[in-house]
Amino acid sequence: MENVVPSLPKGHGDRRNHVPKSWLFDYADPIVKRRKRIADDVAEFICAAGPDVQLWANYGAYDHVCLAQLWGRMIDLPEGVPMFTNDIQQEARRQGLGWDDLPKQESGEHNALADARHNQTVRRWLAKQEARTS
Image (cartoon, rainbow, N blue to C red; front, side):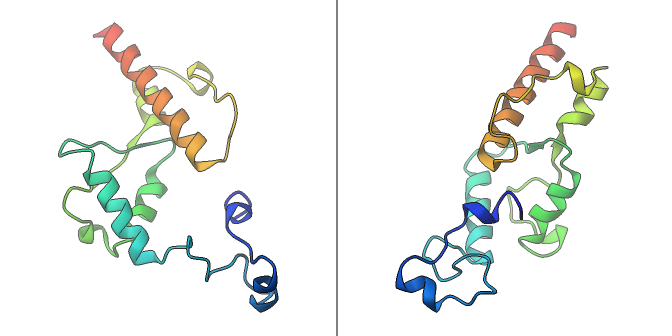
C-alpha cells in the first residue's frame, strides 16, 4: 500500500468534497478498474504473448498465488495463463549465483513497471549466463 496507493487517483476540486475520508483513493475515477476488468485485461495481456509464454518474477511464489486469485482458484486460470511463475532467485541459485552476482536495479525500485523491466533485464542476463555454460 505504501508504494501503490500514492499513485492512485485522488479526488480533485469539488470531487474531493464528495469522496468519503475513509477512501484511500477515488474509487469512482474512470481509470480505477474493477477486479473482473483487471482479470480480463491481465489474461488478454498474458495470452497475447503466445502459446509458449513464460511468467518470471523475483521471489514470485506468492505473486503467482495473487495472480491466480484474480480468477478464483488455481484451476480457474484462463486458458493460456501458465500454472506457475518461474523464479529469478531460484534460477540464479540453480546456476550457482547469489544475490550479489545479479545485475542491480539502477532506479525506480518499488515501482511496478520499473521493477518488471529490471526483472526482464535480470532474466535475460541469467539466460545468457546459462548459454555460456551449456
